[in-house]
Length: 153
Image (tube, rainbow, N blue to C red; front, side):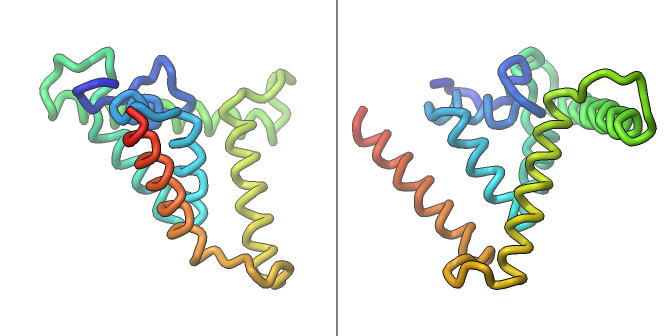
């Protein structure tokens, strides 16, 4: 556990937000990634992740002032967005013929799962499945896991 809140891009998959939060709270980064992925289905999870990416300094740049860290984070997000855009262009425009990156595969998987969830809800394939109830369930489960973990220590 860390006493400082930051991102850890060296251990992260996208911006290092979940990796940094996992060190701060002492939980698995996979659990936080799962929570953010489910939260993303409600629409606000992506926004929260981007806001945290902007506001939290990277572990490697903890010595920077708040404004310098935010400026660097915004440049980093822009660079990542351009890189992802180039990968998508290469994928659909012929490109160099190389395999897609891990980030692009994660994005594709997320879009696929989101589409399947929206289709299942629209067609009422599962009477019990409602996206508007998903976020509270994720919060309840995540809170229970965190409390259980804290009480064990």
